[in-house]
Length: 144
Length: 144
DNA sequence: CCAAGAAATTAGAATATATCTAATATGAGA
DNA sequence: TCTCATATTAGATATATTCTAATTTCTTGG
Ligand SMILES: [Mn+2]
Ligand SMILES: [Mn+2]
Ligand SMILES: [Zn+2]
Ligand SMILES: [Zn+2]
Image 1 (cartoon, each protein chain N blue to C red):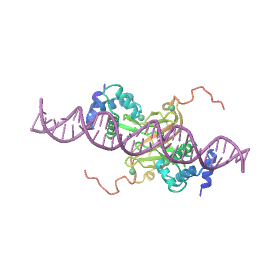
Image 2: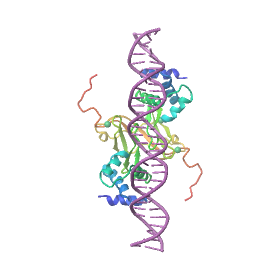
Image 3: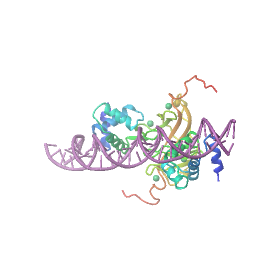
Image 4: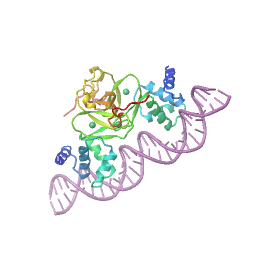
């Protein structure tokens, strides 16, 4: 697949392509979802080789630092992480905490005065509400 | 001050106005910042009466449920919380994690197709970069 | 190929954050 | 004032994350 691409991006960030690190990156690209460290740790160990919890966290930290992976914080839930792909916004479910991607579109910058001396790097929209699974089923009616 | 207002909003949410709960709410309104549970716990106990850690967390949970307080998650940092006031966006510092308010302005909704069956409750912009304190001082130059 | 240093991994301990338990206390309506 | 649903408490527990220091594995130059 894109195993060569993964190797290249690691090398490009001067990170050794170890089996454990590769496994984390491959998992994130394959899933294309927002995973917790615990999920990643479990998943890469279901296959081979055995990777420790510390290594999973170390690798996630390094991959984030290298810009290949992004942290996604969710209120009241464990931190999540995703492979950086095309730019997008996020939808976060109030009920189950699931994070889903929303196709990117440009958003207006704040009035320059609002930012003051701050240095702006990026901006992103967060939508909140109920995901498809948590939304009341179509056609159902609530009784008052 | 607005101590009567705090009492009223607690009563309106059917929450007893206990000294501990009042102290949490008063602290958040007075600070008008984004505080961690540990900060709140320390602050309300610096004064009187002694409040336990469990009570601090319980009260924050109840106040969030009642809609008087809002959770703010920050990647790689302890959760924060703020009194709900006027609607606003957020700026989060890459370096120190500080969360600052940005004056509200309307943002365009996503194309209806992007949302599918999801139920949208709110949307908010997150700006990232360097806060005033972390941005390079005005006039300084980086050497290549 | 080999030696040597740099980078990465490991198990388990340590820390940080948050929730639970069950005994006790208290606010507020009747 | 009486009553009891609600709230508080200390401490235990659970969960999430980082640290430590010993060991292993890459990589590079000879
Ligand atoms: Mn995403
Ligand atoms: Mn805010
Ligand atoms: Zn959901
Ligand atoms: Zn800062």
